[in-house]
Length: 349
Ligand SMILES: Cc1ncc(C[n+]2csc(CCOP(=O)(O)OP(=O)(O)O)c2C)c(N)n1
Ligand SMILES: [Mg+2]
Image 1: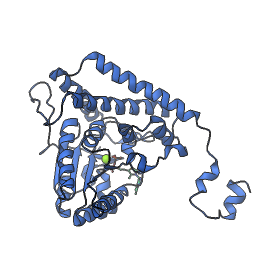
Image 2: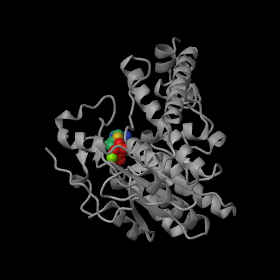
Image 3: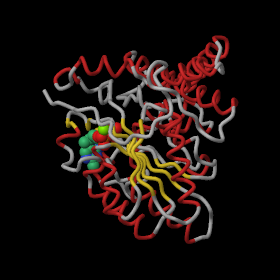
Image 4: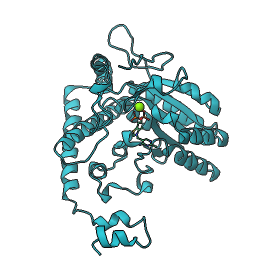
């Protein structure tokens, strides 16, 4: 069984453990921000847990869960302005919810229904990207284009540890570095690429070390600490807006769930490590921090949970109420004239 060592050197961290590790502070956040961050974490956690259930019930297709990744998505996107652009991978499939996208849109995407594809301009959010790392050159191009137009917009692109071995990562990172594009390259290092452990992914001591080759800073942050992620991303956004170019952020976490609903990780993960990591999961850690601060009470916590659950209930009902799409749509943007094999077979003449 592959051994994965906890990669904890030089990590930025704000949230303590309520015991020996003291809590830190983040400048510029007030009580409203603290609660909004918590609401967003609960929204994503609820979305993710409900989606796994919907999959088991046969109501959505294959699903890539992100349990334990919520702090990376919430903390980083909270550092953006609404006009800034987000380029997600499948692991950040529900990040649009944080910009007001209704859950039925994302649920429809996982149902393979055309209503699951949104106009990126509506949310400044690119489509969910499944081919590994291909969103990185897209994001670098958009960021560079914004710079050429003299706009102050920045872009953030999300990808995993495995994506850093892809050519598209190199091309996008190199391009962003050379053009000093206002881009944040946000790597969710959950230490697995399906069944490939980080140790088999790279010989570099850390993924952040790769940044030096592209002439940009590489920052390592505790990916389970929403406040540390926020702070690191806020700094990177400020650099990008000031014209100082891209930043690579390596957020360290550990994938405690399967890669996706089609994966059985019992063949390759160490179950003890999983149980250990689950104890440190990000929503509970932040909840502990807020309770120590005296900012969160039971009533508010329950209200956020109830609101998120209702949103999901309405979302799946709306997604299921969509009429089935016309199968011919699959070919609409693929062929001017469908080949005879398709016309006569699949399309029924
Ligand atoms: C170009 C390409 N190659 C292979 C795959 C198959 N694939 C899907 S997910 C995955 C692993 C990606 O791991 P990582 O980048 O660490 O992201 P994570 O799933 O852990 O968030 C692979 C190889 C793919 N989707 N695209
Ligand atoms: Mg990974």
